[in-house]
Length: 621
Image 1 (tube, rainbow, N blue to C red):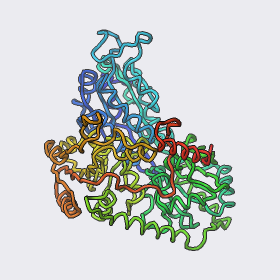
Image 2 (tube, rainbow, N blue to C red):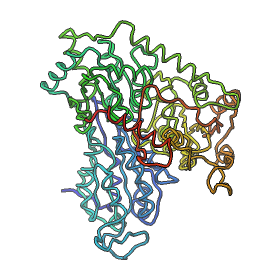
Image 3 (cartoon, rainbow, N blue to C red):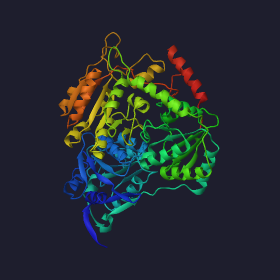
Image 4 (cartoon, rainbow, N blue to C red):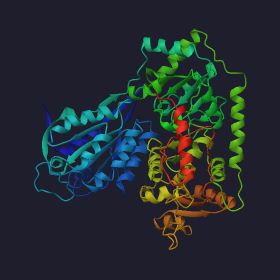
């Protein structure tokens, strides 16, 4: 057997550089590169390997481990999970900074490979800098935290263990049902140890993404279920995009006249003005979608996790005869809401269902014009919110209307947290697929700027806009610098509403007078944050890091700033001053949160009574 002597780190880099995926006969180089911040746990091992590797892996220097990992996730999501970046860090705080991003990727079913440095496998020296010492289990390191949030986790304690670990890592990363975070912990001494690796380990390896077709029995059951229902409703999730099934979804919906609603991950599967697109559903849904959801006697969930926001905490579907047909490659997701599982690739399932239902002459029972009427009513409501004028500043919905009308049909927006995702799912109008990039599995604050950078890496020829609140921006904006360093222009649209206003709204809706969520000065009179709003010049902050920046307080200033930003060749930030509490809300939806059963506040006690009443009407399964 022919071998080559390499360090474990060199072997890992060489292996990663020759991994490919194939779907529908088309190959994609799977590992685009490595994002990293070096420290004593990886710089002399993996760092050395990357420095002297002469292959096709790009290296991108992160500025914050969580930020770069979010960028890697966004890249993979935008690429429909067909290309990824790996992320490397030192041990201890460097690794732990990636934990939030690792969980975010797993929750969203997005493949990301994490390569944190680790303590010495030899245990010499001991303890090493940044080592966690567990007196009851000396094998525990900071990297054990990744175990419950990784779909595959391993520690390479000997250089030859890499071969098994690397193959298992690729198995999970390329599996549509099992994918998520993969963590390979790399002890810093083992990274540098050499081994005679078989040459065949480094040969080009193609991982085939096979489209799972529905079994005959499962398809028959699904057709029978649909055939006896008159008011089916489709929920399009992220799986529609990942299976490249947007055309098939539209064809299926049009053939039978079935309205389509969308999750955050599924939005843009249909053009916003398609006559069967009723918009977002659930807590952040449109009035049209939520009224249709109440009437539906069948929900066809295509590639969605059916989270509490999608189901309005299991209250969105009020028809006593409603049933669920869940099309998904993941058994975990396919059984939710006590649904009938159709384990299959979204595209394959939709094609097979269409053919079988056509053969049986299936027709829905919607009243003529009902769907169009609801959509037209909703269009007028969005137009109203987009044109909303205030005497004392900019409303959030007006700003979104201006942005939506300004940007191009192929431009991409990125968002994740705060009040913006609600307005975006309800109001944003997409014309083309993959122009709407929302991380809403975790709704992780701090994702937006990093995510926009990752999307720009994936789509270098498109304009990419990060829509972010001031609270989320303050949490994490480090990869703004990386975007400048890499020459990947993004435009950050910062909505400055003086704090965590989304949670402030939630708090007050459940009886609070407002506490701890706005960016105000602490006052001597109350001892609390009840003073004037903090005045933060976010444009000046962005300029200090090398970005171009503008400030907008009026519609005219916003329009001018958008025009200027589009002409810039470097990352640009627009600091948009918006009035707190000017977001959209409601529309026949409810979200269950815990409310204090006992309180000194009459308002809180009333909110608890309302919550209890709602819980009694919610589905149990």
